[in-house]
Length: 599
Ligand code: NOJ
Image (cartoon, rainbow, N blue to C red; front, side):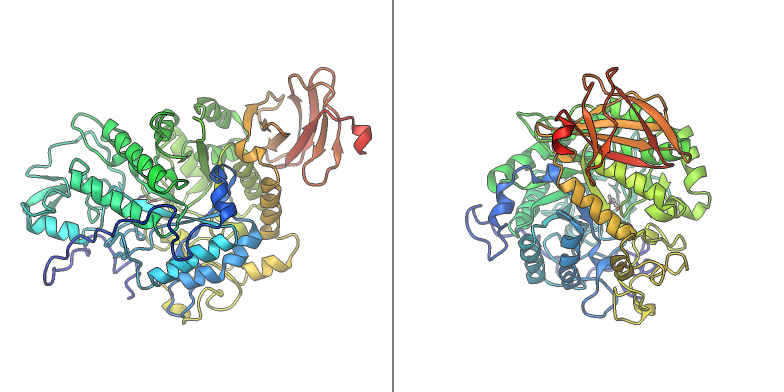
């Protein structure tokens, strides 16, 4: 079994008997001042000049080990990803989000880090990483890396030192107690595998605190040395020329008895101090918050004008509402969550997504809604994981291209910067037989060859098998075929991304919900100083004709954003009637020009 094999990485197998001397903490050398050239990895001037790029960008999450294998060992790698940058540029991607690619036992897909400043040798070297940054930047693509501040792998040298030498320099790097009786109000997140946030360490003869797997001990942020060590890690990656960080699991940095140990004041203060540091030392570096919290809590991760924290916060609450809306054929839930979404502070942006490398989390909806989501989308128990659903977009929506397109149209038009998940642009399938969340992390399907164009290795030696369900295997779904077929999902997505890119109002404009005569029709305006776009979406499985109210727009003209074809003008009573096919949507330009001039 390869080390990436989920079986060999099962929880509980993670603490090898230590050998030899305890390695020292690798504190990277001080970074060069921002203006010093970084051996070629410096962003090109046009990239550096655009301080608000993240508000207009479309991000693409790519798992390096799943994307492209350049050396035939069955595991994707950095050179593989570099070889696909032209594809990503052709598709119209602005930035890549790379989940962890650091040395790791891979017991949590790499979020169990053994060395924060190294590259897992299966993926390449630091030189390869720098090459990736240079090559991506030369195509106008930015690079965002994951930063796991909250916890390390139990194989990390800090933990190994901490468990062996309580009074040594790392003795206080983790949260140790004699009895597991503190912080009992904190929920267990990985309910499938853990029943407590405390685990017993037979070496130190104490319990340690962990919010995720028990092989992922939480770092002790009360210790100033931990805070400084993690600041140094951030500096280290800034100095490689990356454009930003996705801050993993940030609500959980600090603990306090009598609280749920989430979103605490010191956590916010630490994030604000990180922001202050990157603003001063690496200006322009973007911080993205992974905080799976209700809207009023998520928004606190933007910080304030005086104490800014993150540039982008993922909008967890809106995502399940999109899926709910499709089954309920109603815009009610979406309207509710949009109304509950607080206004963004200056320079802030939502990060929106439909699917990612995790389960589709259902923590932000009520118990009752969760049960309905399971019934609709995860009838087979193997489709569920923790409090969520481990499926890819296309099979989740029962292979309905119309539904997928509508969901994508919402993703690309609702406020926020969209985060796409690799493979969803061709409607890749999943494999619910694989453990944990591996079923949605299978190799990218580039062509119809046995290794799906992902790898030349014997297919039985791939780190995870290619999807084998005949509706979704590499013969049925692959990039190469999609590229040649004008009506393919891939070509549709490319056209949508082009349209979004040429209309910045989608990224930076305001959003106004509109009244419609049919609850199944969701209509809203996206508006900046140069344009107004009317987005209309039919959530129903039947055609609908709806009256849409456009206050203050009597006599304005409507035309299709893509083709320029004219629609009926807004009537004197400030309304317009629009007919949509089932799951149909329109993006219409709204203008007050004299239509005769342009027709
Ligand atoms: C959030 C990551 O998205 C997820 O994949 C991981 O399991 C947890 N953090 C714990 O590291």
